[in-house]
Image (cartoon, rainbow, N blue to C red; front, side, top):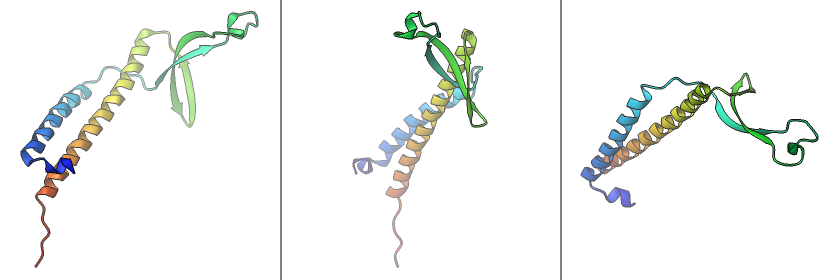
Length: 125
């Protein structure tokens, strides 16, 4: 494994860099913007008028909507207010940043285990 050929100092530099990225992300996550829970969707619809162009071709839209699961059912609410849209987008971005933080932590854990394994021997009598 090429990663196990790295020297401990090189691995520590990798961990240090990851730790800096994690610290920046933690700072950002600890001061969130106002958010609204849900997923943002672009929806195109038919209006129901048989003479309208949407009956045979391109649908009306896009309309922005927010969906949220409650009690096993998905509720969709149309959004016209840009403030609500921004808050829903902030929620989506926050969750992506949480996932990034988790990946950074996994990488740090991986490298720390390599250091541990490099410094571990089997005791035999």
